[in-house]
Image (cartoon, rainbow, N blue to C red):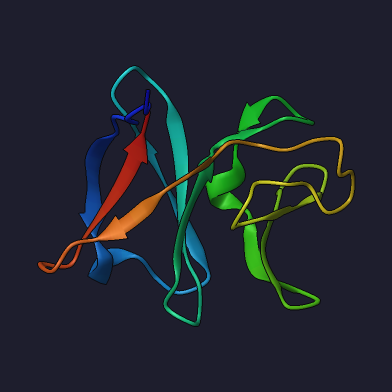
Length: 115
């Protein structure tokens, strides 16, 4: 038997309002806070907005950049870097934050998926 994954897509904002190397916070159905990021390469990523080290919803305010070819956001509190693709903490691989699928519609709307 095959399991079918059902995903809900939430429109977050137009891509045009996301500034490169910046993040914005959004609320998904069910109350999940996500941080949505756009890189200089025009890639869009979404992670949980909760910093697991400070337990504050601040990742959307972190510094976006690159560490050894890996796109990252650096938490504004204790400065841990999180891989934007996977949510893994590069400074402590035993810690990660949820990463969410992102899709930009043909109309230019950023959509974030949740299970």
